[in-house]
Length: 396
Ligand code: NAD
Ligand code: MG
Image 1 (tube, rainbow, N blue to C red):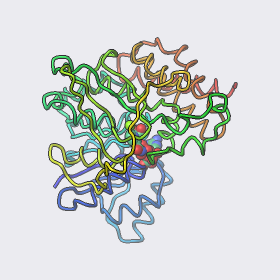
Image 2 (image 1 turned 60 degrees about the vertical axis):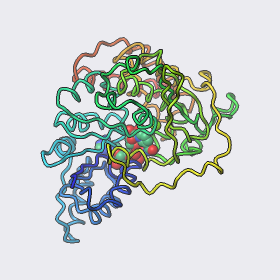
Image 3 (image 1 turned 135 degrees about the vertical axis):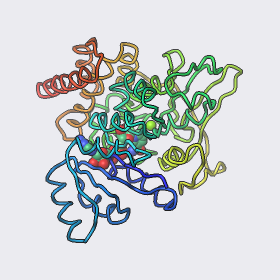
Image 4 (image 1 turned 30 degrees about the vertical axis):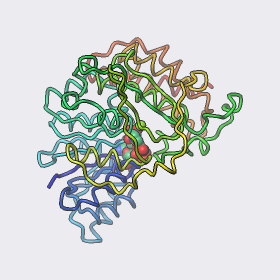
């Protein structure tokens, strides 16, 4: 029986993880579930999965959950605050941690799991974007097992030779005969929208992704293709990939989830339905295969698969991320923080769609050359970039 902590259990990835876990009651048990403040969802999942701990980042939400669970006779203990998130991620009895908090808030709990040498299923790409080298170093120093959940990185992982799967972020792609990693993305809901109309798009239009159902932040990131930019940086660290071995391809149908091109001309791809239960089941079961509940692909109904190069005029956030990746950790940390603030402001109606890229660009221009060596440096820069972004948004 593998004991799991699910960080971000009430979110889109957290719920899909519970969906896979539900199918395998003899294989997995839930040790802890965590969330920010969604009491109703958490209550229902605690009653179904009976975890030892439920952690709410928000104190008031924790009080309400504690009271309601006690009324129902549940033995789940409710904890609160950021320190408790790290504790349930590092607890000795836990074997595997699903890191599915959205944004920078996931960095410390995910790192706590890594430092405790857990099997870490990484959905929280922002954690790796913020801390890159330091994160990968911690994986190796503490003997953690890192399995990518992001569908593209999970697809790439599946197409890699076994020895590279064993050494995340360390092996040489060239020595393994790999020419390029081809990172695919749908291009989001505004792929065909005339550029002049982009200024007026609303949050509701931006979160309506044509193929995937996801949380609000990553849905906006998919529209701007910042998501592909963050994934480019994520791939740089997970696969030790230099820029000349990373290519982004727009593939509107989201059937191929990414590919690896070998020096003999072979291209290995992973295909599937656009359903996160497939990569989640892969990471939960690896190196075995377990059922996910996802329907098999029906090739006769797929129709055409098409590909094109991304248009950087349409997706300035993708360009910014690729440039930031080349510039270094200060630039990627600042970009990630600015983007979180800009997307939150856009979703709240306080920033126009084109403003997201503009805010990101200005913050990276101002702070992107900041030198960051330690985790404290990274957290300080994250904070500074957020304050700078908030100020720019206020003035716009
Ligand atoms: P979501 O918004 O649906 O869920 C986020 C979860 O994090 C919730 O449980 C929420 O309570 C928790 N959370 C939010 N802020 C918190 C805080 N300050 N402290 C503690 N917990 C907090 O997000 P999602 O779509 O499930 O995405 C989660 C992560 O997985 C993101 O990093 C995203 O980029 C990545 N990811 C998601 C998908 C997808 O299909 N949804 C695919 C690939 C990668
Ligand atoms: Mg992805």
